[in-house]
Image (cartoon, rainbow, N blue to C red; front, side, top):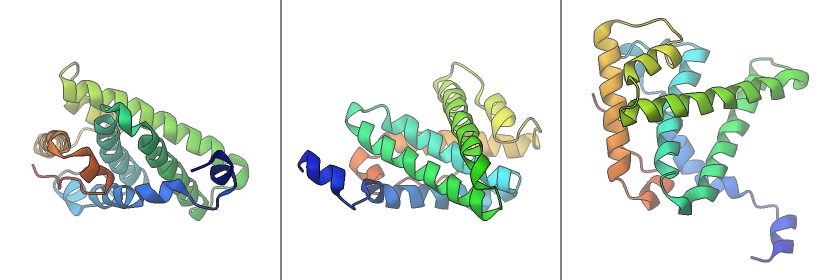
Length: 175
């Protein structure tokens, strides 16, 4: 595609990532997380759960240099979605950018914490208590379920072909 065509095109390349983003949102909204995993079923809790799933997908995709553009598009979809969600709940134009900026900072921090937790450099349960549960530890069994499910999800992503992930085919979590 020529540079002029790309500059003046009405096509949105983020649309390519819609199936993957929809799969991430679908996984993050599964009742398992909120019922058995005791993730708070609130706006913040849903953001935190979706951010956890998105973090694991981004960690997997960044392991391959060839997915840099797709990772950017996926992140842009997240930003656009969060912007729209904030506007829907009444956050005004003047401060929505600041809120989205904080959300992106939170996503980056969670990615680092989950990467360390999954890689064994830190305790994943502590990272989840701090980020997913916002410091309020759930019952021990619920935390163990979520830790195990996210580890299984990460392992499933590692076994899944990148082309399948990019097409929106992500593993279903199981504890």
